[in-house]
Image 1 (spheres, rainbow, N blue to C red):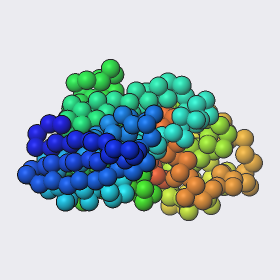
Image 2: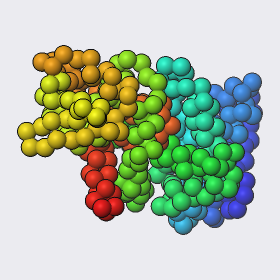
Image 3: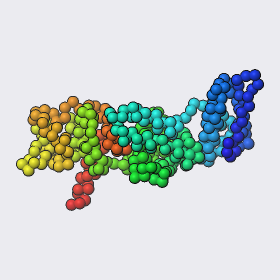
Image 4: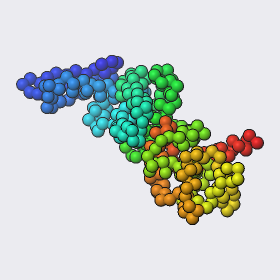
Length: 327
């Protein structure tokens, strides 16, 4: 081992036990490892040594010299959430849905991004895996620099950073991992700055989706171009949507009329076939389901941002602000 960490193993005669001696920063502890299987002997000891070295390196990264007592405590404690393992596990369900909720191209892009994490850790921290709680406050900056310099798809380095950030936030919100306060703030702030762009909305409109996902996408896009919230859209009828003599589509509300020139023909054709007395969008799912599905739709559209239904309203306001500035 490197630095001030030393690990040695000595078989206990006439048993399957192994005695491990660990020295670190002038302190030492010993452990007897029970039930070592001869066929897996070398692999188990390498794994154990790697864990000890990871804990030791993390203490150096945090500028907290570790003692043998603390090293033993962390070794025998439950395994912390590890960066690569967490990211890979989180995306496994997507990998099993190729052709359904994720295309082959997206699968390859995500897999390439995720498999580069051990290389990032090795080049940046000197270890192939790191616990999430040990990540420094500059993690996102380090990740962005890595993808910009070492990625095979440098033109998509920003998307790669977004993918990792989105996964970590998702796992945190599910309660599967813990984040340090500074890192949580950085990930969240990065999310706030990443609002939808006209290009994002175009991709969302054009992506091919199963019918049940397409219906949710259409509601979201409609909100992007009208600024209407979930409750208001649920009450709209087709009678409020009118095609003018020049062929333009308008939404008529009590207090205003909203032009819809950017609504895709595909969505326009769908809602134009609904009779006047019917709701514009029938059987709208719960907002919770919509938000879950929007995450899947975003990934399928190659958009690595955290999108909720409220994102549509924010997009509408941002575009209104741009229009006023141009005037």
